[in-house]
Length: 164
Image 1 (cartoon, rainbow, N blue to C red):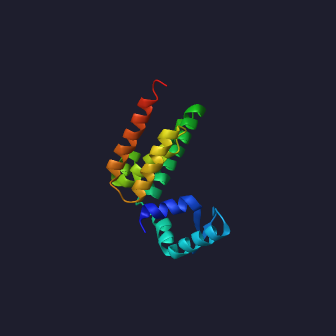
Image 2 (image 1 turned 60 degrees about the horizontal axis):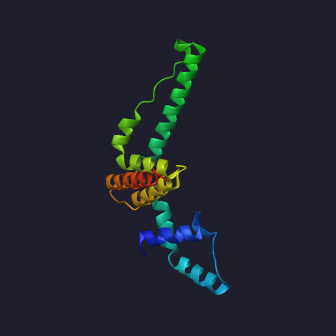
């Protein structure tokens, strides 16, 4: 089964993995349709589990998230030190690496984080572009092309609604 078909099945039936089992939250239709759908899902259970586990395998994604948290903490502590006027005593130590350096070391993870930011946007079109980009990056497409397409989608949607 194709990754896109697995992703559609997971989204449509709201399938999540709990330990080595799958939990299906959204079976619809008559009893016969539910049984048929369950049998179809059961037939590709191993593929679904492998797909769900592979989604978290973007190298450097966790590291970038931790580094971003370290920088947020650093800026918050620095701001507090300036407010209390006790710079010598409270000025925190900078994280070991800048986000730009880390992004250049893990460009695919950086692209995924950028797509996540779009996906979490309040605007429907921007969010949809981000969700599509995340899915394409998870499916191992060229992240540079994916980000370009995402930005183009958002730009065209923004331009179309400019005079609405």
